[in-house]
Length: 298
Ligand SMILES: NC(=O)c1ccc[n+]([C@@H]2O[C@H](COP(=O)([O-])OP(=O)(O)OC[C@H]3O[C@@H](n4cnc5c(N)ncnc54)[C@H](OP(=O)(O)O)[C@@H]3O)[C@@H](O)[C@H]2O)c1
Image (cartoon, rainbow, N blue to C red; front, side, top):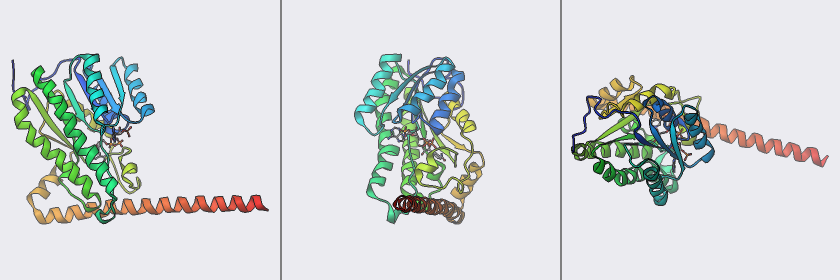
């Protein structure tokens, strides 16, 4: 029997849910996998870096959690099919999809290489939509399901050194808001997570200097995301201090300009100091090499 998805009660909860988490080799995805232990899930973890992915899996196995790691690139169609096929072969169903795999690239739009634009859109948007598109018919057949998409608070606070990233995360938010209405009639909930800055590999991969960006620890965020399988929410904004910030910038246009410019300048500073740091390291390396050469010549 079909039932509507609920956003206010704990209707969906029981143990042994089959949960796919994309991007579980580090950061938020890894922390969410660990935070889910108390729900006794059957997990499927995906990412490209085998060693890191298997490390997450081994931490879970030690806690007696059933876990299937699938080394895969989420942008690759065959890899996405392999994730879904091996989940169904191993567990027979898919209850929850956590679309977390993603990355940022801080850059001025004028300087952004086209490959970076492709990578951001393919990973953060296209793969997420295609993964969801492949899985919702399975959830519809089951009569229930739960989708959790990781967007970003920058979807609501667009900043210039992250223009393409912000556009991808805004697309994730709007996609979730759009499909929610269609899917609720099949018992499928759609929650969107909008994190602020968190301390993960995200900053390094984005090309930002960690010392300039002040991120929170992911553990509390992971607990809140894990809870969405029990109690879905339209939007989860974390840390809590970002709720009034987003609310006020939505309400007052002039404040939005001012606040986003401040955040943008902070990010730009983190980008520039990182470039300087990398340049400095390169120079130091070169000087070392020259010194060694001179020494060996003498
Ligand atoms: N940290 C923040 O401040 C922050 C804020 C807002 C939103 N977010 C979002 O949160 C999500 C998780 O990021 P994070 O902060 O946890 O950063 P992270 O530590 O860099 O984790 C990103 C994860 O995504 C995976 N991934 C990236 N590209 C992939 C690909 N092509 N195929 C498969 N997996 C891929 C990575 O695994 P492999 O490299 O092993 O493939 C890794 O497991 C992202 O969507 C990010 O945009 C982060």
